[in-house]
Length: 101
Image (cartoon, rainbow, N blue to C red; front, side):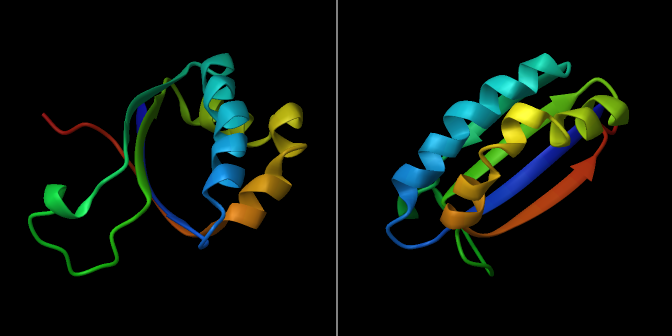
């Protein structure tokens, strides 16, 4: 199992465009043995300390395999809406890892 953490930074005034993209992208995760395990929109009162800009949203996603994640990224339906992602997202930081026990 692989785990993805994504810090998402939105362009000013493009929140609705981002939400439109998410309405397509998030359900697509399920098609590829993935699960959105947490979606957070942090605010000033939820931040204890920061040395980076606070993202608009934080997503935690898991996929059964790397192949599932790669197939999600190649999904043809999702690709049709990547222009919404490009229009709305200023930048994103993606961290891929595994659970440590």
